[in-house]
Image 1 (cartoon, each protein chain N blue to C red):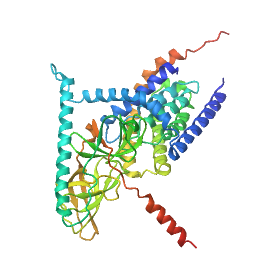
Image 2: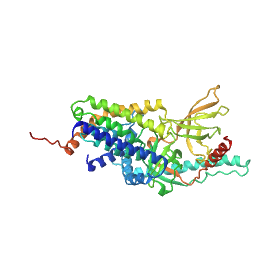
Image 3: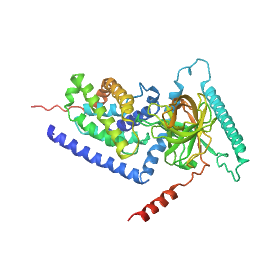
Length: 296
Length: 168
């Protein structure tokens, strides 16, 4: 085959493959038709990914001392991490309950929906390969009751808010981390009750923006999910205030947040499966109807 | 590339890229191992296997990633086509062409991924940060690693594609 024919064949092959990829992108974005394919491929690979990830954890500095039963230590360490996580979840919950109780005496019918969280624990098995997103893959899926939109907590330090389930197949799920640039969630400074929006940054940090000027926000304050919007449980710890940018001329102040979770060391997470997000689409439909009525 | 070699090779590359390499980020970027294997094979390739493996590798990458299914394959196939158009002999005999083509190809791939993420999938992209802290370091790492990957794949390629010498 001469070079010209060879290049023509390559061009045709590439054209066909580009069309197939574009069709997959189109179909995948608009429907769940390709989910079975993703499940079929990812299900047998998930244990392998877990193995690779465990290997990566094992070669972390300081993990290879001679004469130490590393597996037993790892297991013990994971148990302790789970216990600490449970206790810190409990602590934050109790703090929130205390604050809620103070307010509930004045507000009739106060109802905190997020006090009893049912969770499914999962191992982190993979991380996003693109470099532009901050997502992690976990070894639980729809078979374990996980759904898109479920909140995920965990981290070595305890009950940190990890992110939200963004994609799910039968046996695996992908979690959009709170530090992902696509993140924008309603948050609350626990001490001052100042509300704002937490935004992920591509370099891995977090910014809390749109904090009203009248609130005093201090370094070390704890930032938690506010529950506003109804898509996430309230009271999940996002992180602590690292620095505050406040300018009198501005309407809002801004704070840099240090996430509670060390996302590079994230190994185990817990997916909150009991929380039922509020369906806000009815408002969208109502607005659309209003818009249609107003239209000439 | 035979399926017996290709499938395990790409699965291994994807698993490495999604488990171990994210822990080795340099200035925010990480090497694109699948892209490197695809490019190296396309540089050696006298047939049209490079683009086919670009498609397979891209799909596997998307399954092990947060990006929508199809994005990596859609970005990887055209840039691999460009890489594979050059004469394979060039890449075996000198150092500069693989480095240059990897830089151009990796830049094209990252740009296509960014454009698809931003304008098709609707992900918010901070262009300055993305280009400076992810794209550039990743391209640099890809350029640094292409020669070792190319060297590693020369023998398997030659074994799978023995040259037939005709008698006159």
